[in-house]
Length: 220
Ligand SMILES: N[C@@H](CCC(=O)N[C@@H](CS)C(=O)NCC(=O)O)C(=O)O
Image 1 (cartoon, rainbow, N blue to C red):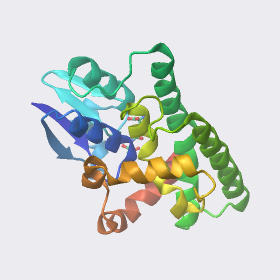
Image 2: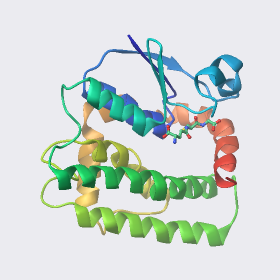
Image 3: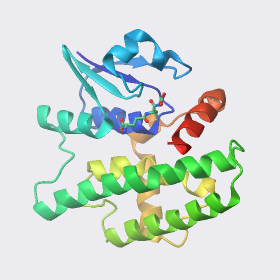
Image 4: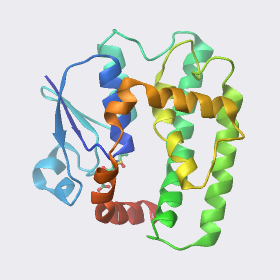
């Protein structure tokens, strides 16, 4: 059976977790606490970059969440999460990359400032402005459908839709972006989102590790 090394508070892992659930693929969960156990020699053997998620399929070890999503999509044809049409597929990839490359670092900065791990008002302001650019861009990609690129859920919705819902609580309201706001709310009602949403207690318990991990991200 597939093994997923992850932690419920990790957004990078959550996209893989949701894909596994949406595609109804059985898997075994191995929780990596990220309190230093990601540096244990046994874990570094499977991911020398000390990151989750990691997917293990017998003797095949895969790191990087987007590569894992590719593997799952190619190996398991049920409940497809990628469209076939050229423009729709490219849109999914684009939303994924914008989320990972643009939005994710913004969320790290916003969270770190909000939690008082860092105090850099100029960088906070820059992050808020960049967040507006991303949400405007995403709003422009949506139409009457609640999904980015298709009439049904795709990886674009999973990857972006697990990060966008955090924005209002981090000082970036979505009220002026009605399509993105509605789509985000709809996704949060899905069983797979509800099942994988980290609890308040889990988030609070994770604060000490969060500080270390966020500071490491921000100084990269
Ligand atoms: N690009 C990687 C990023 C993975 C990543 O940064 N994971 C974080 C958790 S969200 C992690 O494992 N951090 C532990 C560390 O850096 O020591 C992916 O998409 O899989």
